[in-house]
Length: 410
Image 1 (tube, rainbow, N blue to C red):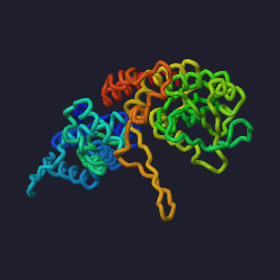
Image 2: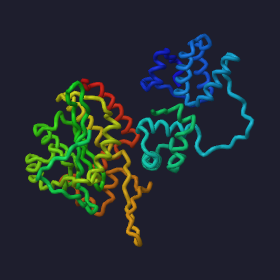
Image 3: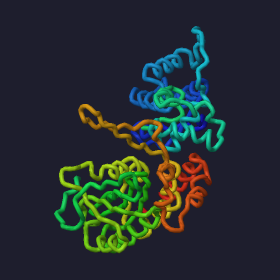
Image 4: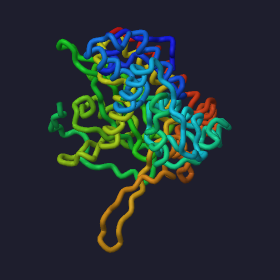
């Protein structure tokens, strides 16, 4: 915990309301008690009005991770004695499997990866130790998915890391209405467009998201607008960034994809164009899910003015850092489908053992090299995939993302 920083009452109110610009972390009870005492003394808690006392109480709950009853007990102790001291433990203690250092390591990774699912985090922890020899994760490498959530609910963890219009279909006779069947082959893309918000009647930039159905290899490109002037170069750029040959291009019925110019470009590249069927919302569900868990999580909902400068800044970050991170360093869940022989009921499961990076999924395919583009080999891709560990790349990606936001003209 940064015990040197004592915010004003106004800053506390903003922090409690959701403007969490302050980052106060603590791993030790004595440190937390000392900081609470320092806050109460600095603001002369006993002499404050009731609304200000409530603000301080809410603020201390957020930064310490303590419950309302625990926070009130500590404040009562301060009022009556002038200090806060840990109570002596009378119950016997037992050594746990995971200590405070392990919880701090998990909290640090959750902050870097922005709290991914427990299944995905087990993959990161195992790879950090087994593949990148990081001894800090010696005990965490074998942690179960359920116990990750148990550690996330501990007070120690919470002190370190506390995280707080429908498209209308258009009838166009371009593209075949069919659900693609890749049959285990990469190159079947699901494509969608995500808008970065309006403000005062002005449109924001757009993101083109392409996800391969089999490997979940993902490419994201930013464009100023979804007119042909910007879409065709962006699609050509996105297709060029994919390491394997593209066979099928599947989109919804948006006019940015279902038009003669895009059809002509795809036909030239011998890529089949298909589009979603009516009343089949799952046809493009994969990429729409990625829009939420990837694009919205990292780009948010803030309006970004549609200028060429902004689009170029975002694309530099995407190509150099974000796309490699998505495909080499971010685990994805891969579905296993089971059919009951008696009833014919289809069940979809996502076992932990099937979490892997899109690049690992690509390499795991039978005779995977046959799908690569000419001039691209797995030796070349390995150099990029293992140049840095997953966490090292993620840290650098987050720094580059912060630099990108500073360069964007809002």
